[in-house]
Image (cartoon, rainbow, N blue to C red; front, side):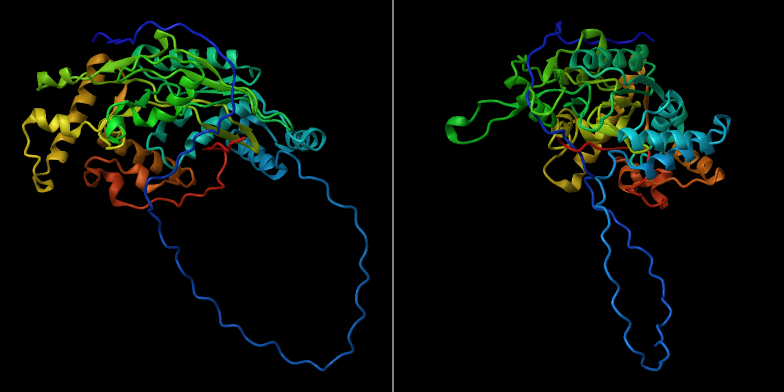
Length: 438
């Protein structure tokens, strides 16, 4: 099957100055929680009475030197990771020598540098520990790009574009993480301000301002904040519904970000059609192939890498049941229902449910026709339970957030719905964690 490339208009790479901005962070949209099990405690008994004694003289306080500030990198977290690395990688040998070297480096400098092997395995463990990810079966296949020697905005942008080319792989999506310079004592590393390397712009129109209304959003409302920031920096948006946002990189706190148009060959997009309804293509919908998260910190053994974009591949429901269907995103269910001729006069007709299924059919069909990797939620659910079984055989838990693992379409028809999982430990490391603002 021929690969379909539907490019946006020709873009050229440009650059401007920098400005401060807080990194966006995300949270679980649900409030699922499980009450902890209660355990009976033995009844307390009174201590036996003893004869009264003369009070002992109070201890004379001794002056101790004031404790210095804690090291930038926690030595305990570093030691835990080194032990885990050597335990799971027996070929690395005895950990004692490496432990001494790491703790000495932290004592002298406040932090330490991972070996290439430690960095690669730590990034893979961060994927394995990702409680919200259903695709962890393939955590060992993650391609880790060691780019710790790069810290300038220009270099980071250039390598992010190379990341997208490598991950896109002509449609056969590869899981990739690109790890740039870490935070160091007194030297915070650069940040990417985009939530994903590829994301569509969204902005409010002027319609309705005369009568007090807010107008309408063109494009993706989830991209509105970055859209406005990029415009303030001088970016010109074509106001297309699927206009790719520029990449914004901030080198240091308090400086203006640099912005870069994504080259055409980095942005593989799939126009959406339906196997049975020819009119579906007339809706003009499309989506990009590589979901590369870029606003999280990769934390390994106490070392924080705030610029470490990573990607897997899409599960169809992420596009068809969330990005294109959510009321605060592209909100396409009404348009699809109208074309299908559905009765939308009442929720009891389940018109949203029917439109949602057809929208998801179109997404899976289109990616398959384009030769672009995508998974359906039934297959991915089976794969996740295979991952859980493999981890159990190795004596390891599989922490999972049920509200993220269960797909948003036909959840009850998937095997991941009918069970509980190991509880999520927020302190589990290595991990991809929400990035703290400067």
